[in-house]
Each structure stands twice: as structure tokens, then as C-alpha cells.
Amino acid sequence: MKSLVAILFFLFAFAHANEMPKLTINIAWGEPERSFVYDVTQEMFKRAKINVLLQDMPNKRSLINANSGVDDGDATRVWEINKYYPNLVPVPVQSFNIDIVAVTNRDIKIERVSDLHHYNVGVINGMKIAVLMAEEAKPLSLSKVTKHDTLLKMLASNRLDVVLVNKASLFNHIDKIKDRGFYLVAKPLMTRPLYLQLHKKNEKYVPRLQAALESIHADGTYQRIYDDVFRKLEVELDQALVIVDRSIKTGEQKNRGE
Image (tube, rainbow, N blue to C red; front, side):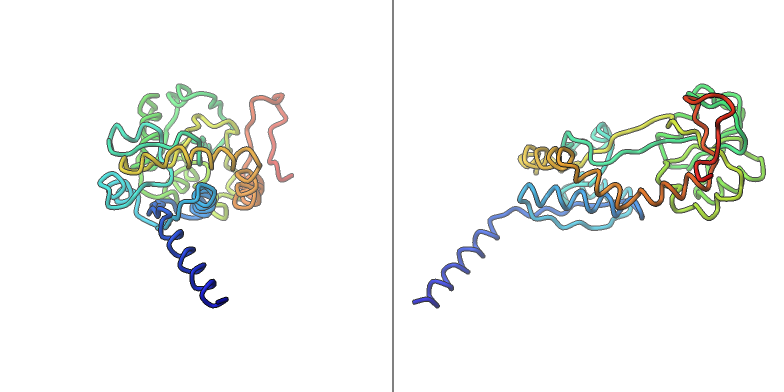
């Protein structure tokens, strides 16, 4: 009798597990951003009681597959991505963000995008937000390159005055940055929230995922995951650069590692 009960319980649990939806979500980030996006997305689906397969995917292919329905969604994109990929529906709670920051080879005043007008500026070709910002400012010159290493070398050799990058991308280049005397403008020129995007066939899951992500923010889990992934790297980055913060008095700019 006990064996029969155990078998029935197992079959019930198995059937119940099979009733849970399972979505395949693409992640198009490299490390360390990938670790953060992976952990937040996994926790979100766990709380929403939706099975998820998170898979790494090249940037454009990730969007194409999510938009076509080959995969079920993309982990983090700007809200308005559906202007270009109309089958994507956002979960309306921030899951990550991009900070576009200015790195310079001397202490120059960059407080707003229009300030770039007076300088030779470099960006990563394909990073659409930064490219559009730089083009809007009409700088003395605009260099579009494919690698961060190239940008940093051009900055060090004075071929550029300013480079615009996603702050998180600098974490992979700390060794190349330190001892160069580079300056980081503390206030980002632009911050863009990013959202989980689902193919429209999965739109019914948006309320569950929204509630789950809201709870992740509310109970401190989001901040804990952020600190686990980024806090040590942020300290190392601050030590490698001179931080320019115009909100403090002139003459107090310093390397935060001092």
C-alpha cells in the first residue's frame, strides 16, 4: 500500500512539473554582466514558477531568434526595442541598466552631451546609443572602432580626448586602464534601463514575471546580486582612474583609491 501511495505521489508530482511552462531566454552579454543578468533572470523565473533555460547567444542573433519566436525572449534590452523587433513585449520592471560614461586623458569639463562638441571623441561602432549621442554633439572628430583596446590606446596616445563607453565594459580592461592617468566623469552622460523582452506568444506570463521582479527589487535581492558581481570590480575601477565629480568642490578631484 505504501509503495502504491509513493508511486501515485511521484506520478502526481511529475505531471504537475510538466504543467509548468518552460521558456528559453537568450543572454547576449559577456562577463561580468552575464553573471548578473543570469542570476537576476533565473531568480525572477523561479519566483514566477516558470521553468527557464538561459542560453548564451550573439547579440544580433539573440534578438532575431527572440523576435521570430525560435526562442522565447531576450534577457535585457531597451524598452523601445520593439520599434525594430515588433514581436517583442517588455516586462515593465528594470532588470539591468546601461551607464554611458566619458573617459578622458586629462581633466576636462564634460557635464552634458553637448560638451563633446569641443573634443575628439571615440566610440565603439555598433553601440548605437553612444554613437547617436556623439553624432548629436558634432565633435571635432568622431572615431568609431570595434574594440575597447583600440579606444584606450587612441586615448593614451592623444589621438582622442574623450571616449564614450558602457561603464560595465571597463571592468574587463582595468589592467589596461590603471597607471594611464585616465579620468572618469563620475556622472553618466546617460543611463538607460533594460528590460526582459518576451516574444508576444508569451505575453500572458508578463504579470507573473513583473510581480516576481518587483519582489526581487523590494526585498534587497537585486542589490545583493549586484554587489556580489560588481562591488569589488567598482572599487578596483575607481582605484585605476581619477574620478571627476563636479558635485564636489574644485580641487578635491582625486583617485578614490588614495
